[in-house]
Each structure stands twice: as structure tokens, then as C-alpha cells.
Image (cartoon, rainbow, N blue to C red):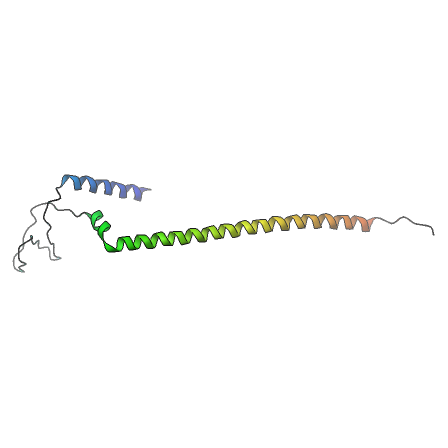
Length: 131
């Protein structure tokens, strides 16, 4: 629950920051060597620029517009449907097995009663008949 709570805080914070910072900010490239190159300026390996502002990335927009998002969402939903079908089939099998167990238990109880009656019949001495 703590992870989810932290995630929700991050999403809410990102949403608030996105509203505060205007969307008209220019994008900048940040190479791995730490230099910042402003749009429209040529990359010069000898010149390094310093960051002069705050920038943000709208991850939600990137995620929603990425071509793989719709495909992966569709694949996920298809997998969920397959798993739901498998679960339903397993539940059906479990119910069938429960019915077999109940039926078998009933037959066992009837056979136990029959065995007890047979034991009683064998232990009883027959009446002596005179012929």
C-alpha cells in the first residue's frame, strides 16, 4: 500500500507541476557529458551551456501517444480474457470434482451401512428348525 501511495503522490505532484509550468517551454537536449544545448544552437564540443530554467516532460502524453501503448494494452486485455476463461474452466472442474466427492461419499456411507447389516446377519444364529 505504501508503494501505491507514493506512486499516487508522484502522479499528483507531477500533475500540479505540469499546471504550474507553462507548456510553451522549449525543449532542450541534455547530452550525457552534462552540456546543455538550446534549440536552434549548433552543438559545439568545446562550448558548454548552462541550464537557465526548469523543464518538464509530459510522460503521460508520451505514453498515450506511443504506438506500442495501444498494441500492448490490447495484448494485455486479450491475456486477461484468456486467464479469466482458464479460471472459469478451473472453477467448473472444481465444482465437478466436488460433486464426484459428494456422490462417492454417499455411496461409501451406503456401503458401510450394508456391511454392518451383513455383519449383523452373519452373527445372528439361525433358528433351529425341526424337519
